[in-house]
Amino acid sequence: METLFTSGRVVDLVIAVLLLEVVLVRGVLGRGDALPLATVASGMCLLLAWRAASSGADWRWIGLWLSSAGAAHAVDLRMRWQRTGPAARRPGPALRMLRARRTR
Image 1 (cartoon, rainbow, N blue to C red):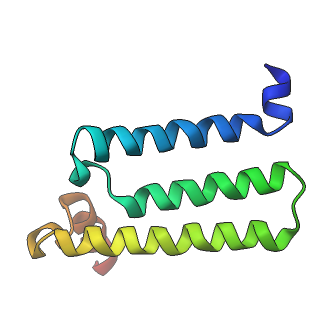
Image 2 (cartoon, rainbow, N blue to C red):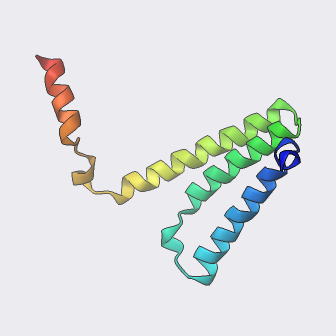
């Protein structure tokens, strides 16, 4: 078990499980809306950055994967923001209370 983690092979295992999940949810079950690809891409890029770091890859590869994860995350946030209506963007009661305290 120790060699699984020290060799970085655990990342390969997690990537395989993530790909299997994508195939099952989107392909076999036909529930594409349940698993946004931008979310999957963000997680996959983070896993690939971890894999690159654990295998001793050049820092540029790690930076590339981290940047790609950030870009995919931004796309995911933008898609979620567009799906929610204006009512969902209103601050909740806790945030309204904090803002009211600041103005006193």
